[in-house]
Image (cartoon, rainbow, N blue to C red):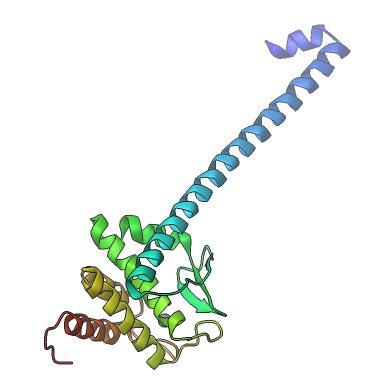
Length: 201
Ligand SMILES: [Zn+2]
């Protein structure tokens, strides 16, 4: 129907057709922009929630350990990691939200994993492990893990979920990190010792 009508209208019809085409393209562009804005708002809210969760945990640890201050926390989306560099703790907010929401089937377990991660990084920070990107020798890793075990034990949070994450995410270790299973075993021993049990290493 549209073509004969435009044909009958002559040059005016062609102009009208062009206007309609432009409007359709404009609508499509607006729709794309609207979808992108909605997506941006979703990620902004999600990262804001990650920020609140991480800071909330850090503040609980600060109170527990009588720390005078906390380091700045900076978000590094896409890194799937957390680390200390130049006195700043960097973390991937999307990874943290994934862990908080979906690592285990219950909130307590998911929260304990993230508490373990934040405690480990704060352990580096309070001990001044301020190397360049992730180049903490093994003894610094074990020390930060030991501090995290103390935080978990003091907060009454089970260490088993955090151990599980460490044991599975990096099974073989590398120059900067000891093998995950060895770290998990050591955390378990220290955790129970903090709680007053005699556990063989
Ligand atoms: Zn570390």
